Image (cartoon, rainbow, N blue to C red):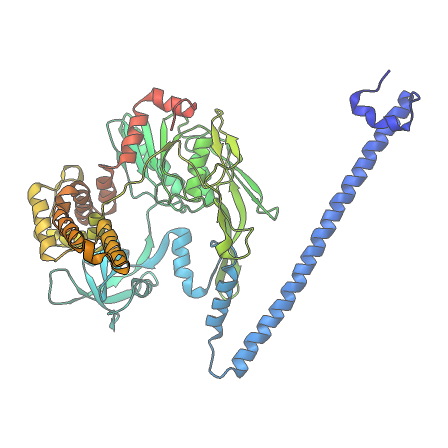
Length: 582
């Protein structure tokens, strides 16, 4: 009788029959030998790893010794005095530049910016600023923060800071001077828009905490909306409170969670936010790194708030890290529909390590993997010879994974939305009007003449107001270069180089005149988008950040898509079951 297929490895011993006891003994010996081989392999791997680590430790000690002696020699013998601190920071930054862009050194001098980056708070006056010509101008003071409480408004030009001229200073340099210890006073000389006489303003700095949720409200009778700008401490609780308020005061049948432009923050906040919509015990994200401490599995820990309400998560190319964990988890668990454009693809985990003299190191320790098992990270920084060699995954789809309902999703390049929308493209004239601060300055003029405006939903740019804007632009001698004009200039240059200019000069000149004449109609041709920018800018002056977002939502195509999905239960279910095409 032949042996089972799994035991044919015993056949080379000969064709005579084996006794059952002999067979059992040999199988046991085989298992024992296998264990020894496996143990030996593991031991060899461990020894190899230990040897490699010892080699690294030796290289580390050797190069640290060289570096210290080199710095000492420079300090002693260099022809001029050196600044060891600056040299050291430059050396560290250059070294870390060969790694991923999220591993950075934070000296004590940059701790304020670090606090803002990690906690969303800093000591300062609470205002957005921008360099315009020779001076920095306040573009948006946050409501109820020191700048606003001191009477500073959009358009105010900062002439001096604590008695020192601010002329020629960059916005970064002015920002550093405006920040400081909460409770400390700061004297500013200000020239308000439309004034000719400067005035002195004393601002008392405060701890400025940027709100996680700049706006939440109802977009229709039954569709709620929450804009989450960052995953700083308390983000999940803030969303849960906003959601509870919407649910208590309205007949809520759907929710839009807007993560567009949200660059991320704390991973645990993303896990807790997911817990708002999925039950306790759900896997949300896994981190995998070189050390045991950096390899962890994160599940939801609390009772779910609402596991049935239809949910749409909005994302764009600037949604990153914790935003991608949240959006990806909702997609993988088929808990919500993701709408928008491909996300950033930042799937690397950072820890903060304390260094001597109050400096810190933000170091990448692992990668993020969402419930389906796919990694968020788009660019491979770990298999490169130099930073320029870092490669983004190809346009072709990466490894495939499946959501809970069996929908196919793919690894690489962040999160691909379930419903992909086209990014809005503004005309050249709109972009130049905005970038040249014509929209900003016209809003300044408007505020000088108007103490108030109607509520956000009732304010619009009338024909007469738009005519005022056109006159304002004409008085400013506004001009801009269209793409067609750029191509025409290139054509003229090419014709001149190839000696065709004499033959075609009249035609090219006529074409240029026609383009110039047609440009005169651009303010009317592109009125809808220019009008939208004007409306948002003016509303911001009276209703601040919440009003700004509320005004921007009214003509938002992705909002319209989200409302359309949530208003049609059959479409919503079809998308999550994989029956609805993108």
